[in-house]
Length: 377
Image (cartoon, rainbow, N blue to C red):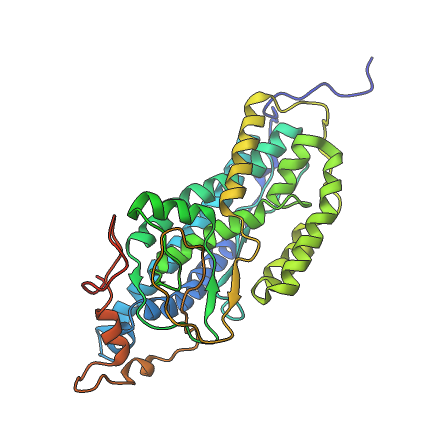
C-alpha cells in the first residue's frame, strides 16, 4: 500500500467544506467597505474640484453645491472601489469553486497620507492549496478581473478629460501613464497626451490606480498574486525571484515617497522569501494555464511603470501636445479649500479665475486635438 495519498481531482470532494459552516463577520467586511468608500469619496472630492473648479464655488450654494460635489467625488470613488471589489471577488470566487476556505474581501481605508484614499483590499485563505492548478487559478483570477474592469473605467475617463491651460506648478503630483492608458488614448482619440497637457477626469485617475494595483500585485514575490503564479509555474524554485523582487520594492519605497505605505503593507502582510508549499507539488499546469500565464505577463507589461509617481520641484510651462509624448503629470491641489475657487478674479469679470480656466477648456474626443472648446459636462 502506498504511503502517499492519491492525486486530487480538480475540485476537492469534501462532504462538509469549512466555508459552509463558518460564520463570517459580515459586519466587519461591510464596515470596512463603507469606510473605504467614504475615504475614497473624500479624496475624490479634491480630484473633482481639480477637474471642475466651479464645484468648489457651487458647494457654497445651500442645497445645491453639496450634491454636485458629491456626484463629482463619486466618479472617482465608485470606479476605484469597483475595481478593488472585482479583483478580490476574482480570488474569492475561485476559492469557492475549488471549495477552499477563504474570507470575504477586507477593504483597507486610509483617509490621509496617500493620494488614493485606500491601500486596496485582500482576502484571507485559511487552508493550503491542493495543487498548483488551484494555486494558479486563484492567484491570477484577481489581477485579470481587476484589469478587465480598469479598462472601461480608464477609457471613459480619457474621453471626459479636459485640456489644461495653466503651467505646471511646484509641488504638483506627477502621474506617469502605463502602456495600457497610452494604447487606449491611441484607440479612442487617435493621439496621445501627457497629463501636463490635460486635467484628468477623476475616473481616469481611478483607472490609473486600477492598473497600478494590478501591476503591484503581479510582482513575483512571496504571497502576492505574482508570487502565486510563479510558484505554480516553477514550484519551489520561485523563491529565487523573491529576493530581487523585495529589493525592487524596497528601492521603490526609498525613491518614491508615495509608495512606502503600500510597500510596507506588502512586506509585513503578504511578502516573504518563501512561498508555502501546496499539498501535491507534482501535478502540472497544462498548456491552457501556461497560455494564461503568458496573458498575465502581458497584463503586467501593460500596467507596470518603473516610476509611476513623482513630484514637480520647479515650475514648468505648459507644453504643446505632441503625438507620441511619454507620460508626465497631473495637476493636483490636494489641500485646496472650497473658498479657493472664489479667488483670483479675472479682470472685468465676476467669474473666479479657476472657473474661467475650466470654461475655456474642452473635453477630448475621438480625433480632436488638444485645444480650447466648450466646458466639460
